[in-house]
Length: 481
Image 1 (cartoon, helix red, strand yellow):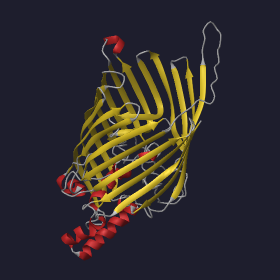
Image 2 (image 1 turned 180 degrees about the vertical axis):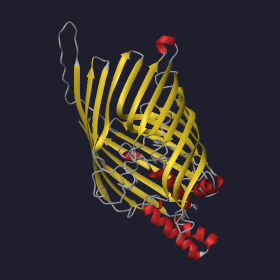
Image 3 (image 1 turned 90 degrees about the horizontal axis):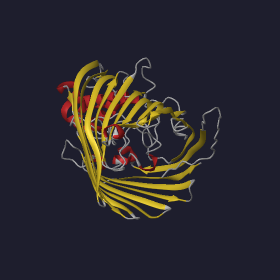
């Protein structure tokens, strides 16, 4: 749980026939973390020594400005992950985010810097680097340079309707061509039943002209095709000698970022998300279809000695569904169930190279707060904001059945338990059983101590790790001012 509190507030009244009030507040967060794992190379195949314990710190100071209710400005800096892994070339943290070759090429950047205007009570215009949720948080949820337009039609039409437009310049990969700009567009129409109840219809479009999806496609292809079972599968088709050569080529290309070196895609998402209460029961549902087309270039490792360059055009079709039911226990917490599904392909690379269609659901910057599939989320999910595609980055898709237990028996304590059974959407295998536990003790309004324990029992999908236990522990302190 994170808070922001006012440290300094200055009001200036300028009397010239009209009164103006400028309010300035400084806030900030410092998050300290310690992480250690067991057998995490299964879930982080690109990480060298993922089980190794390490400490990290995140510092996020912020200044807020407001004027007379019609103007608001915010500036928040972010240090990135301050740890020895940050400064180690081609190394990742446990979540595979702050890699100099995969994400930012520096560790200090502006997380939030925007201004917001209210020319009328029903219209809000905002521009700058800010937090944007596109359609569903499982599609796009990140801090990016954006322009947003919000129009509340309640007064004009006497109907609780609102429209939101987000225009986002996507800048996740600074190591790619800076002369091109990928754009994300999001349109949302929301009907509000009450303050917390709503249904939203949305349409979003992503025009990738900057190789933004190339790392995403590499992640999908790697997780589905090139894991510890690769050599066995390749040997059955190509023989042991050529299979070893293909495997070596694959590993060499992934050490340089992956076999997909460039991407140009145009993807659309259409769907709905909503939340409704019936007494103490809360229902939440999200449904999304993605469709579009693209082209990729890269190295064809199936001819390992020659390594020819390939160019392929392909279509994309995919879907995602998420449903939750929660029962709220007054002043104690809530319990419930969830079901999550996203489409996949048995062989994503082959689907692109030969069939010309990719059915794996794709997202740009997703954020899945309930399932935390494959350990993405928990007490670090507000800090590591560079995640791409669905949690787990699995091209075979995910089917998850799980429980939701969130309790706050006293004001200073909150703990959650999230068990889940996980399956590939396209095969009869079993990913395994995951159980994530988080605990937060809030000392006072400025200091809290979070703890997280994640446990994963591997299923038969991971042949060499079947029935093996994978786990990690995270804990630390959050300080706000």
